[in-house]
Image 1 (cartoon, rainbow, N blue to C red):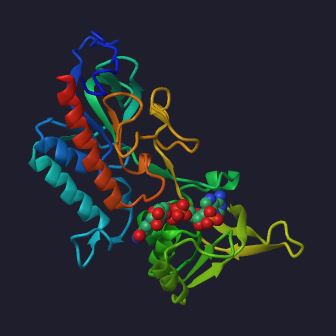
Image 2 (cartoon, helix red, strand yellow; image 1 turned 90 degrees about the horizontal axis):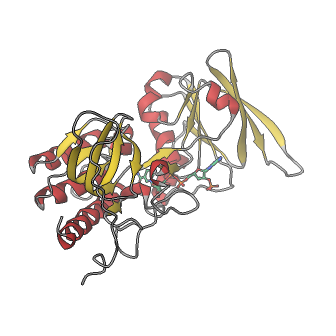
Image 3 (cartoon, helix red, strand yellow; image 1 turned 90 degrees about the vertical axis):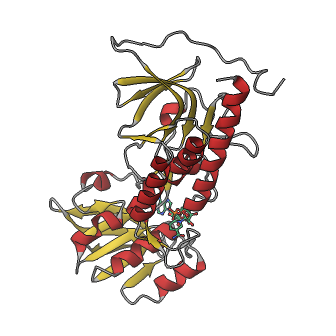
Length: 334
Ligand code: NDP
């Protein structure tokens, strides 16, 4: 007897909750359409699991907000994030994946088949669920940041950078995202301040070199953001230099755009009542597999990977999730 046959999966006869129309049943449901979701779909479709993928809030995932992807193997000249995701989608569809608009807004994994609500209205049931919902950009949590969201505050330079052509902007963060955003904006803007809270960058060496050698980028180490100000739209930002040190001072930058690049939060909230996560919300998977604590529910990509968070590693875990799902379904006779 296999490990999973020993696990009790509560069976539910209920296929129709609060609706007069019959509930659709899906054998392999994939939530999220980044590299993890589409790779899972390619493998699941080729294994004849007839996967259905709901694309989520950001079809194509985070890569659609980036410019050039230079590190995805197989593209010696690089490829744009949008093109890469379009290719992955086409590849998934070629083998029969049903790609749909819509976002999972609620789940009930307390009995099997599992229930998933799409856009708060459509209830579907699924034998296996692959969670590939990715992660979302973090904000600093300042009141003024909230006030100017969409009026000068953005978490996506490639989406909004165009509006700041020839202007002065600031980017917060010291990782690869911040370096990438600063470089992208330097190609459009007059001046880019990179606001870094530590005395060093966390970004990879190659990205650091590009940042330091770009004459339009000025790196402000050991600066934290106090508040963004303006008059309907952003006009500047007040920073604190050397916070908590004897030489602490306030710095005022006149800028038109303020870009966040301080990391991401995993999109795992709706699963938390059932699926185990760590203290920062990343879904916990078992050992070297994509199994969660709920039998038949698998997690892949940025929602479960806080270490690597790369398109290629997300794709790798997507492949593993589909293989795990296929084996589990077959072992369970589903
Ligand atoms: P990271 O977690 O690597 O970096 C976040 C940065 O934001 C850190 O410098 C951190 O500072 C800073 N930060 C966090 N919170 C705050 C705050 N409240 N105020 C000020 N600064 C803050 O996230 P990234 O999104 O940059 O990267 C995520 C992963 O994706 C990494 O593995 C990265 O390598 C990868 N990536 C790769 C790219 C590429 O290869 N082209 C492009 C983009 C990302 P501190 O250092 O002090 O903690």
